[in-house]
Image 1 (cartoon, rainbow over the protein chains, first blue to last red):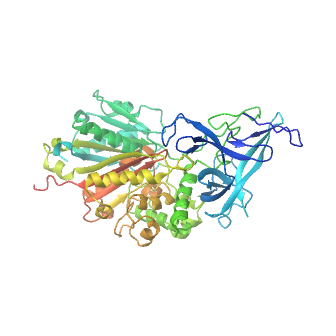
Image 2 (cartoon, rainbow over the protein chains, first blue to last red; image 1 turned 90 degrees about the vertical axis):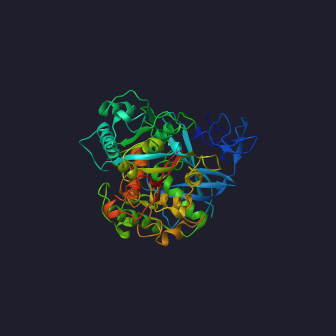
Image 3 (cartoon, rainbow over the protein chains, first blue to last red; image 1 turned 45 degrees about the horizontal axis):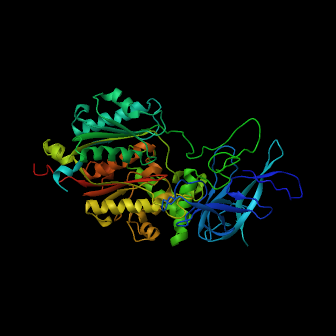
Length: 142
Length: 406
């Protein structure tokens, strides 16, 4: 499900890295499937809620501000993945989200649990059809 | 527990962990099985069930092993449960005995892993034409690992340790390195360990960084190895020789859990709750508490993992894992020796073998046969494994009270 940003100044077609990232004309945010019964949230599809087994879900937007609750600085990864990078878990107003911490030097001196971050997007590059993929991460909020 | 419900380890063995260039998985598994049978003074003719685990091979390891050591037509269970595979195989054999299907069985776990490199990264995509095409459950147009966090084992377990520090405080990178220093030190007394060299704190912290705060020696060592155990019912054991009865080790609890749903557990695996649940069940079943344990072999797949499991196994107060380590308690000279084998960081981690090899280590001490690294007077021990996904196996083992009147 590609999302075409027709109002953007350039005519480049843009697609999100993953379908739970909504680009939304310059107001990017993440969405989740929320169980209508208990509120548990999932980033990909579920037949039933893992928490309460109910079967109805609604799509909800995830808060774009959050707090780092866990991180690591990965120095050794599979071929093709640039290192080092910061992998983290961010608590976005009660919903835990996986993502990299970006726009900061990946050094233990700069990253800590409890630090406040916000959603940020960046280009993953353009494919042979001229379509640009947009990824997300979290950047320091201050 | 009535005598009929009791299950004992009758014979057990682990191979040398390390690089076995001259042996394949069948050779290694068969070596452990033959030695476990000999240790118990029995043969394949006595076995009523075979449960076998091997993750990285081609499948059907149980039947392959039968062809190597004895085909008797008994039921074979090929089990797969990540790093808890060995413990799951053992528990499968134990359950068959408890169900009354047989009075003796054998479990084996084997892996060839030397030089396997990084585990858990497999979503790299390649195609001739570069085109963003959504695929998979997340509709991803390109690989997510490394771009949206990381699901590699070192990255996950590093975050699990850092998360513990965030929750309770008092944790820094050096603390994790000191845990690794302990296990590398312990391994110097274990001739079957893959690595048997002590490492200083400076060496450990100065080594190649894998995923902060874990450097290479703080990660489990990929290596080859196998372990096997013969289990027997209490009533059958009582018909056997006094020597067999004396050396048998009682399985006071055999517990397997998976992770119940909690917020965040599908974002970063929660290895804490299912371990705590397994430990709680195991202590209740065995009628022992953490303070009764003379030694613990826990799943230190990374130094960061060992810290959280002090807490999860309730070896310390909740939130007190750093203080527990700093007190010296988990050193072999301390009040609750942890990973006197050297642990996964130094003894090594041939995945499917690990959940039986840790039982072997505990049995070795309970039998008083651990040589230079014997924990004197050991009577009760606990063995723990975690497989991500997740599965947790906890076994409580006790020195046999049988045969001692002889």
